[in-house]
Image (cartoon, rainbow, N blue to C red; front, side, top):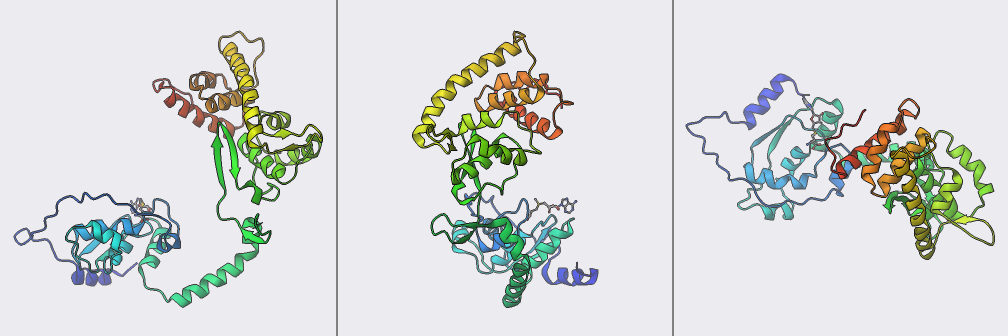
Length: 351
Ligand SMILES: C[S@@+](CC[C@H](N)C(=O)[O-])C[C@H]1O[C@@H](n2cnc3c(N)ncnc32)[C@H](O)[C@@H]1O
């Protein structure tokens, strides 16, 4: 943070007091479409929530300001508008071409933020550095965290079998089920925290993608992995619904595409049966009361099958004192989505 007299000196160098008799500033609204990707060295140098790629801000600064103007960014965050102001000295071609009558040249900036982390990041983004010193500092930190980093992100390349680093883990949801893309690169699925049905499926995919296993092989691992998880379904049920059992060996493995189709057909019949049970329960016609965890599983089922009205109707039956608070919160969120999707925004959901 500069001293007050430094700030005063900076202002007198770069700001002109407003004078209505001489001011001629006029700009039409800037109306060109701006596209800016995030995967750039500047953007990736340090993360910050709500950060905007600076090359996407450059056209606005080129349009609304002149070289030498002073920009006041009172909520600077990581300082991207100020980085953009500096970039205006030599603007990248793409943003430059968007601005009719652009006047390249450096602009100046004053940055302010409530958060010390933000001002630290922004200050360093906008201050020239010795590239070599920065590289040396980076190498020093990298060496210091290497062991921990490799433990967390190290893996084996599925193509050459050599050591590799995980860059992305992508989950995708297909027909209400969660899949882990690239599951073959995760050796045993142990990198995953199993906390609900979706992560249990991903965890099992990691295990069974490596080596088919019998239910007996899986039970002790399942008991350890799901110790702190809230999963209404049994291991058998999850295996049955998501994996393929080889008749000859009795081992479970990932299904092929063809096997998945067969499972979907079988699952459709099971889903219709499940829905009938839910309807009977909602109509007061079921001769048992499901547990609260089971009700949560029904809500998830209804959500994945797009039976939004049923999910919303089930939620008031869940007793929040009888399910884990975190599970209740997750299901409540799901129901909120169902409520919007079913067009029943007026209904009030107890929190
Ligand atoms: C949307 S972010 C700004 C992101 C920024 N444009 C960037 O390039 O990263 C909003 C910032 O406003 C800051 N902020 C919120 N309230 C504030 C306040 N009263 N005074 C100063 N900064 C504040 C927050 O700390 C946050 O960094």
